[in-house]
Image (cartoon, rainbow, N blue to C red):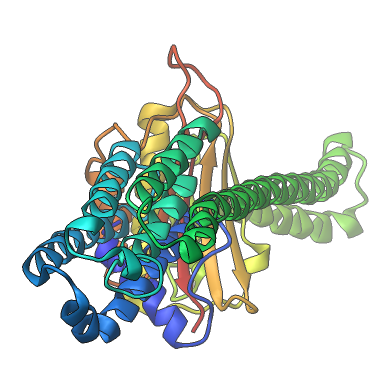
Length: 408
């Protein structure tokens, strides 16, 4: 879906007090983005307050203003790119930010005195580049890359602080250690949250599979009862020994059972397209009876949607199932609807065990891009796509698409 729609939905839920971030891998990445951008924004806000005094104390105010302006522009570019992506796992961008931070640190002697390099905002490099260490902890999957960033930042800072007064050298060493501390804490927290979200996602998948199996067994029991009644009547009629007094009632019962069987067979065609989440989901699923499909909606009973949103959800689920039919080669498809009053949201998950694709490189066509993306954004419904491609293409971990919206 459009990132603008995602941001609006997140802000709306935060404003309504419903919690801004979902407890999913995508939610964790948004949290990491908020931390990295937030740390830098706070430092720059502090610098803005101290700017008049800092400029007055600068040894070369013009150089001070030029370095600060360049750093502000670079920070704005980084913030826009990571907010648009919804994550900060862009290694080239993280290395570019590290390079910019090192240049700022190396430029400190050009506009600040040695005495100002540890105790004022005139030499703003150390405070503002702490966010670069945090960003490296978020962006890089390998510890050695994060360690290299810390070493570069600390080295540049120490290299330009050799001439500080002797009384301030302990402060310089403490500041240099802070780069490692911020990076270690950022990596610890981000790694833990990512693992926690992955475990939660697996738990949701297991719950969906368990619910689907429960629904399947319940449906089998329903069929067993229906067929048991019919078999009993058919045996009586086939035996040819029915008393005349029972012939009429028995035939009436046979007709009633036949009607029940017909209604049972026709159920997918009679799913209502009402303004409920269950109605929208079942109406869409009813069009794909040829798929190995399990539909579980028990936990979403009572979720009411406005008619326009219900139509959009139905169209999106139908489009996702059409994609499964055309591309996935799946042996199992689960459509699971759920509602969480505590989180104030509902969700619909369409999961298959087919061949999958790479969301980072594969272009999103009309199905994911429009029918299950832009069309839902207008109704405040977010879309999260998780797919694990198999090479060569073959049934594997498949694709999971989750739609989320606010409860009315």
